[in-house]
Length: 314
Image (cartoon, rainbow, N blue to C red; front, side, top):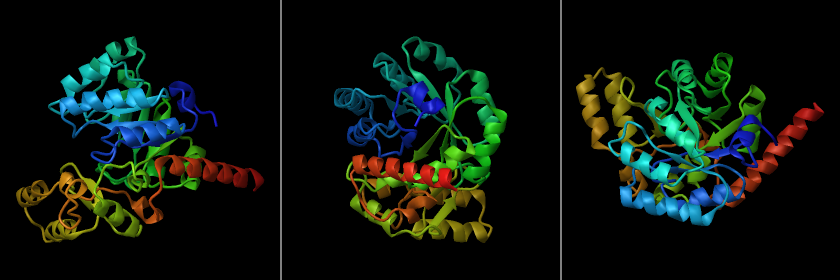
């Protein structure tokens, strides 16, 4: 299947594995997805500098196919990580949480394609004006950091496509090939999946976390942190306490204090799925088994082709 994204990045399938802190902060998942013809993306955010450099080397040794690196531009480590990524001449940057303009020229000079993650029409316009190569558009169904507006993927992606001419990678609410087909039909040039790739052996999160994803239903996520930097995560004791306080009209200071007392690392590395931030999207309810990432890719491609044939026969 050829799209503007597959042509731009040199990948076989219009399928991205999302950058997920801890879950894809390793080489194994990125290598598996990229070798299967998709776009594996390293989540650099939680990594120490030495680990980032080492893992980049592992990825470059493990695949000759394109891969991406996600660096949150507002991180205190961003400048050093950007220098390392530039030195390594990474194929694709999937940047988030900051302005790209000042970085584009030097990365373009070494052949890196720059994709920018946005969650609003306004930020999509700004990223296009800055000169990025493509956008990743996150809708409200997505795990991690969906749009504060809580606008769903179908509406937000369609609206962004009305405003920009750039290729768009749609993200949020997809865990199978039928969902990929739906967003491609909407006008997206590729589709990003995160939660589906948590349920793989290559994802470097605690087994408790993976089991929680498998056991979740589509209505068992919570939107936590309105008015701050909201996240979507599985409902658990932390999320229920936060939502209860929010509904009771607790001051923002108290909500912020509770929010900061709990972390993604607590769930992802320590396995505390009761009080940690178990970040996952609504598509957790569509995920029912742990499979190797290469097998996930194979099934996604087959499901996508089946959906395309079905539509062609209607």
